[in-house]
Image 1 (cartoon, rainbow, N blue to C red):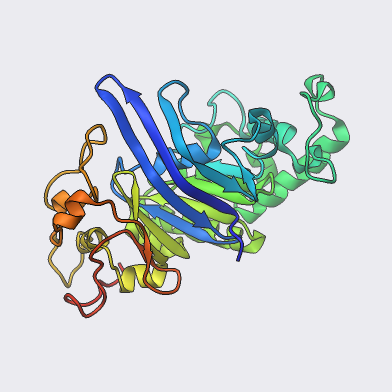
Image 2 (image 1 turned 180 degrees about the vertical axis):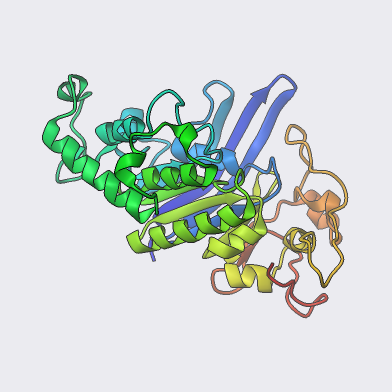
Length: 354
């Protein structure tokens, strides 16, 4: 199947007062149409930087893309005209669900005003038949919102709010953000991400700020809505239990590199990279003792030579310290970046899912 999104050998540096941090080190990742891919790893591994690079919102001046490609529906976003990306891709074909629902709305405007502003500028009705947008900034819209289009867009908003299980959606649009709970605000975020009819949603740890019962509700809702609409999702999280619940495939990152990529069942049932196994062993379980990962996450300003995980790896050899392993297939859609992958039977068997 052709990939909707294809990131190949992406290399991103950040200029800091201490030196140049190699935040993404030639990372590769793909997402198929309708697929939910989980991007997991410890804090600081580069998950959010990768998401921002795809969206084209890396901090100007500090971030430098030194190489690689980001292809979306056959177009290289790194070489596309920025105005075209802003008009046709960002906020429309690719949308975003932020991490914190409490700071995502302007507190002085009603929820309805903010959602309709989104529709005013990103509505699918602003495109021509070939999917392109009119050039310029649509001066008619600067003078107001055409009544007929406003009504059609508002009907679309009410429909998606009902699908997102927002009670009394017409009344909800007249209320201020502080009148809603965190879970309700995140439902609004999901609805807003779906409104432009995107092909891809990037969800940046969208349940981190919510309690566990609300998390479960939001995950079930997101999973149902994206499957009904055939939308692909890049779901970044540090919570492996959340990834197990919602993702079709999981990519684990460490210090700016992707270490392992596998369908969810294989990822939890047949983890092959030593780092993946250590991550799974660190999950709380009533049947096993928690094992932490020795050592520290390396500095991205002065990263280790060879495999970036080798200083903390039980299986590291001289080859791991000097050479940089490339991703290799283990069968099917299972790939691992390791000279000495662990296959089931080589060690103490598979690590169970959470």
